[in-house]
Length: 224
Image: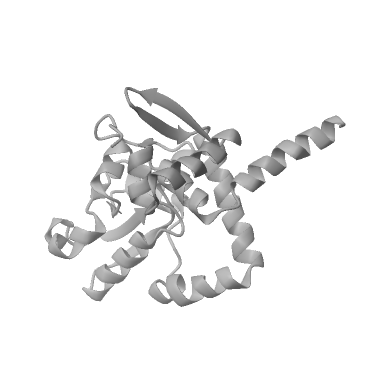
């Protein structure tokens, strides 16, 4: 086998590791922060055995790394920027080339938010000028592990009961786990239904972090 073929063989292994919906979802969860196998199985709705099997495939492809802490195995992305960028690129190709993805985008995502999303560059400028409230609608533990600077955390399940926590008279920019995370779409729809000026960030926390932008950590993460 020549050097080019050897490289292609390894790249094919990476591609094969991405070739399952559950594994892509596990990467999305790990992009929010390190997690134990038990926690990942709950978040993804998988059995412990299936979660472990998928993680081993991702580990062999060097997309995730593992560390033993006591009786638990803790997983994290092996190169956050590269893995996040890889999944993001996969999504862009899928949106362009696969009709079923375009149908889902139209029927679900665009139906809830036809306005143009806020780019990272635009959000940074508005944050500097104090013109926007940045709203993180992920679960609290994900927010605590890392979030955009100055973001306010109101999980989607609490949003309607905590509207008074939002400053008056400011645009709200919501974000969550990534470009296809439904939390931010639902949050923006709920806020607009109540007359609040709201848009969503074009992607989510992992892409913000992968771009090398500043993040804040509420406390040291302790994987469940």
